[in-house]
Image 1 (cartoon, rainbow, N blue to C red):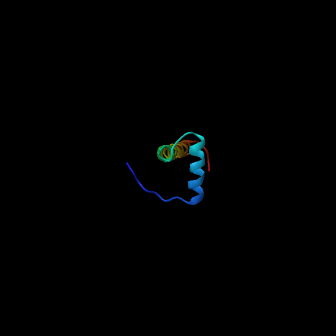
Image 2: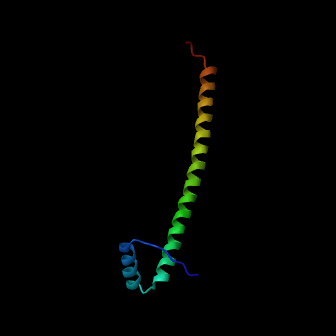
Image 3: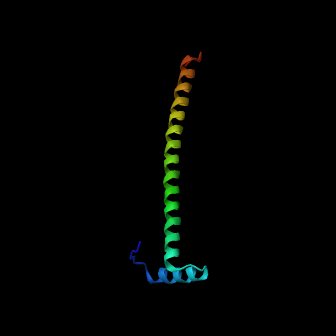
Length: 80
């Protein structure tokens, strides 16, 4: 598929140099760069999802510990 994109001059020049140095043409370079960046973003999304689940689990555990601690204190023979 053909597409047209706009990039800053410095980015274009750097991409051209790096692609040439690694024996790639412009299309190969930009396709590889897009794939790598898409993979990075997908991995970030997965990490963020895992982090949010861990936060929920940790919050549930904290609440459970707080309730258990409250029960122990209420059931204790301590005089106030």
